[in-house]
Image (cartoon, rainbow, N blue to C red; front, side, top):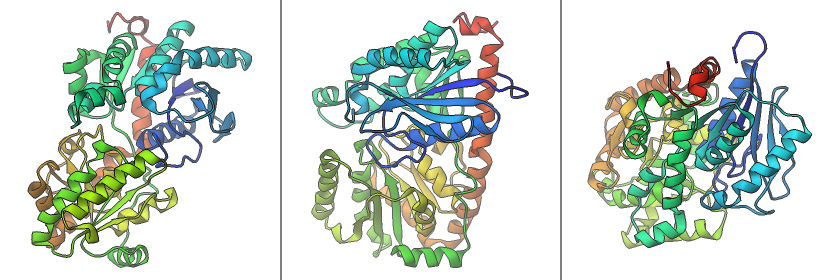
Length: 430
């Protein structure tokens, strides 16, 4: 798997969501993880490796998306012709494994390493790796134990909807049986050790990356022009993401009355799409909360943002908010930082531990409305702070989260596994 000479053959598994060469971000189960897998795969291919991103085929999608000479998305049909949410994906994984082996044999596909993403792909990836005798590196992205802690609802309802007991049992087995784990934050690494008893030598922390050429700052004059074009005001708070309860949009709405105490004309711009009735019901609930608090006229629901427009929406925002109850990483906040936008991020995740408070970004507990509102108001009230966050935040994002650097660090893991059969066979490092 050396980066010199002939490259390795990498199988990346990401079984849920709408994975494509040009993914429709905001579709169900289609967000930061899809971006992560695609960008990492592109870098692997650019570095001379051959990569198949294997996912699920449904909704009349083609079998292949050819992204380049060395990179393609390969869709394997299983679980029927319609969308299946990720919480139910593991009901169909045995069928996926059988169909993949058939397709792999028909096309005489061979691989040197498997890199799986999320626990559904991890479960399948481990069976495949054991069958064909290659190393399996798993990237969880999210942890069932951590996510369950952040949910506020009836425990029976939570279990019925998310099936955490089964997920956590299978996660434990994946983490024990795979050859190596890649956590995306230090906090996630700590949860892997505490909740799943993963030893330190069995994992590394490698964060997600950003597209450095795409997410860049602009001059203040350009930012004002973009702001006018997109209808943003000078005291708007912007957030973007899927319509998911863990994203904490209700917590941001609850902070708005407190924010109005210091910034009376503050508004929230929600870029939250609704592609199904379940998402629509969530947005209706959040709208009702805004009306109940008397701030509905200060909340705009701008819906799904086209991928090509994402950078300008970040640039237009005076402040970006990441109010999640639970957030494994928070790629949107890093993208906003890279665009020079001051960010206020949740403490319920791993991102805040990476930067200097007050220099690169701000953080607060979104479950405490006054605390979160205070942090949102700071860049609006103090131009010097806003300028410092803009410049230092963009430098921080570019330095630490460029995809080429992230890919090289990941390839080092692959290379070490190939060169150490003791690790591959699960007996630990020599």
